[in-house]
Length: 439
Length: 130
Ligand SMILES: Cc1cc2nc3c(=O)[nH]c(=O)nc-3n(C[C@H](O)[C@H](O)[C@H](O)COP(=O)(O)OP(=O)(O)OC[C@H]3O[C@@H](n4cnc5c(N)ncnc54)[C@H](O)[C@@H]3O)c2cc1C
Ligand code: SF4
Image (cartoon, rainbow over all chains, first blue to last red; front, side, top):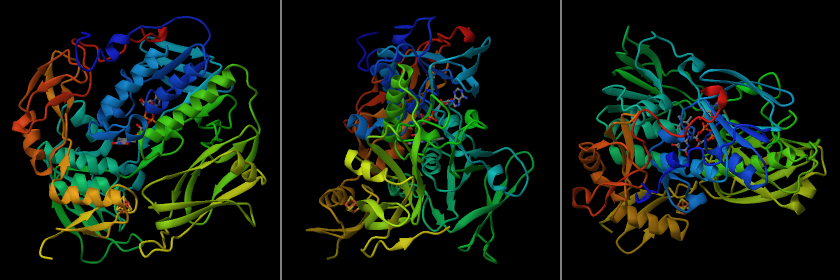
């Protein structure tokens, strides 16, 4: 099999370094790109036994179902598809001696840290030196937004539809309406269209698309799929199977505009309503706030990838995992757990910032922000209550794309002067800019 | 100025609306955007990805891609042609399963390794999951 162009793939690395006993230095929960990067980085940073657990039977997280390309441009300088990226990342982790416990769910986490795992034949309590939580995201569902109407079959989240088509080989329906214009929804709209399911249209409640311009152009425009901005689905019809939905135009406050209701026959409704970090196993223990090395508020527990911040690209997810993995290896080797010395908050023009804390060990940091500002030449400041501590200038920003800001030792020294700092963004000068989105 | 094609640049969050004319472009704020807009206006191309039915594996389909981008307006034709394939496991990432798709000079390549039989991937080395 070595003669195949793609190499043996990860099927061939089975058991390469697997050892069955001995203490676990780092246990990573989740084998998506974040978990895989964390595990490999931990091994490379000197950790002994590193184990990845995942409830799925194969590694890669959400990637195996994301068959389109565009993954890993920064990481590998090449546009991979999701499955290719997953296989490379899993292969890399396996090659440096990471153990995979697929088909294993982490049920609970406790101080220590202690993990309760369930696999095919039972329950097991693991006491690793450190735990890295890399559990990714869940999709917001129809239930989360209380969409009225009946409860027929034929309503799918975009991710479920993506998995049905790309992994299970099942087309969910013949005529679909897509609600929400997040990236996953746009990508699924194209996929449905190419597989022969008519996509009647994509309905977005806001006045701008939720996904990247790239996806609007390549998934919708390329294939003549209509995008209705300022519209949403207001009701679902059908008894056993979906028979149609009612769509309507909405005003800025989300109220239905009189006389715009329209019934669209369809047997499939795809919801693309955004992603929510999956923090189930941290519930009741600590919130999702991390410091510059992805440490949570719980001793020797880390959080990374989309569970910590809904990143735009898998490259960012990978970098984030690596950061957590490296730190986990150092703490597994005995490094003292640090105190938090500063809180980081989102101020005017900033919707979210991660990390939300700085530790006493911080020497450098990479901040990820979602802004409410768009345009060119935008200034972001990190401020103490009354004065700016550091500034960054950004050439072009949009609320749909996160920005990453780095603070080296000099900047960080300044940032740590205050116990609370807030990031604020000022609209740019040019005509395209100057708008602050309020919601 | 008869011929002018509008292109929305997708390379950065700027989202410039570029007009491509025979001898120049208008509206791009950078060189990279200009080149991209010209390419989009004259010869837009996309990498096509889809799935193919596979036998003898735990999964019914395997994902594939074109080895290079194809003309934008031939995406649907490519998917239709590729969907006629029937493959047998094992399959390996990078394996070419169709040469010279529609005479376009690009191949179709598997993007996920699939072993034969019921296994999907790595073994479970966790003692709890046997
Ligand atoms: C449906 C969907 C489609 C997406 N499509 C794209 C896309 O096309 N392009 C893109 O760039 N990004 C996409 N994303 C974003 C994508 O999530 C990230 O790019 C990336 O996969 C996130 O990596 P991760 O490792 O943080 O999480 P994930 O890839 O989600 O991996 C998390 C893993 O943790 C496992 N897990 C969770 N909880 C437990 C538990 N308690 N015990 C054991 N295992 C557990 C899950 O099974 C999963 O394998 C998509 C996200 C979703 C939800
Ligand atoms: S033209 Fe340049 S600045 Fe404008 S969107 Fe494209 S890459 Fe960005």
